[in-house]
Image (cartoon, rainbow, N blue to C red; front, side, top):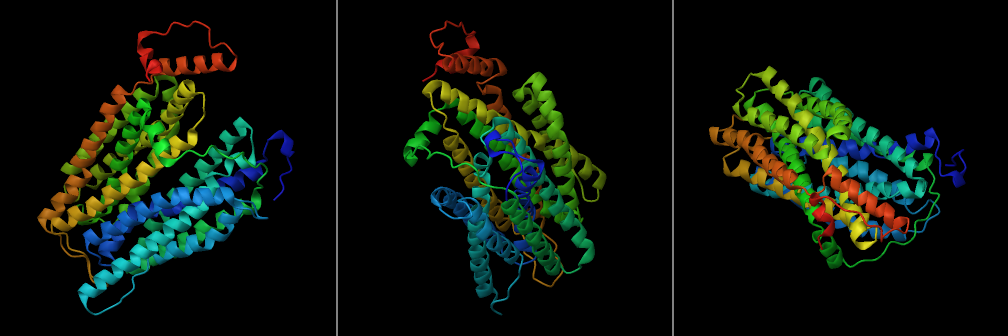
Length: 480
């Protein structure tokens, strides 16, 4: 676990960076499969009613949002010869893989259909809660590991680039395995169980690579303890942050709704089995476009990039509503267009957040990244939980017929097919339009951000009294 580079330099070897990046591969694999496949697995393979399936996802995500701060505090206070972050990753990895694989098992509890429904609901809800605890137990300490590996600013940026590369690779690998498994297994229960077991192993092993290939060198100073209500007040009093929250929630709610409904759309409406391939295409295009949009953003700014990407995405989502069964070329073309827009959902909101944090520092003199990041992640999880729950309720209320394990998928009524098309077309389109509107009024432009950085630089140099005339659009700097 020792790095050949001197600890005093803050520099890390390529081997250490590679090991650190590997730690996010498992979360990338599991999160991708759960987003794209869990809802349709629960209804079409396990035979759970859509309303109950949506409730499983709702309860799982709410528990995920709640356990974040609890495990974060426990991780901060851990004292172990393995390190306060490594020890959680070391002992949490096996439960993480175990509970992930158990989500893809289809148990049979009773010959009575109604009793079996509620028993399945209880089983999958329990597994979802336990998995989310295990996920947080390995992923949250992992994300907190960065400052404890190095205090060098550039090295931290480099570490996160390795992390991002492994996370995306895990996402692609998961979808590729899902697509290939459809050729290996005819029985859907066996297919999903094989995916779950295989991906569980591929998720756990890189975590051990990370633990054994990195070393916690620094102990961060204790963070300022701020009461929860005070944290909420700080976050909500920052007007640009409210815009970032809105933009982020709109982008990701549209994406997550599409990810959850696209398996139903491809199988029930388009009469195809290749929803893993469609999801893979979206992700691959999004990854390629991340680098393209990042380069363009340096020339025209974040807001314009968001407008361009969202416009293509909106066209793609709208077009999916009008596609007819068998129009496969159109499906793939629109999926590629959506991937171009999805890239901006990855890139822009999170790149806006540091601007908001710097504005807060300018006004308060404090760096409070933790509050803003935690609040943003919490709202993401709660919004996603509610969105997926409503998708399940919508399917059930429109007469969607769940599959019976071991039997061929039933023919869905027209009302359910219309609900699926609305959920993949007009609904995400409306949400994305709201996001565009918020981006239009987002107050931190490139010029405003430059002014923020200048004022911070003046303050750090002891030049707070230097007179600097701000142009009219800088009003955001003077808001209380």
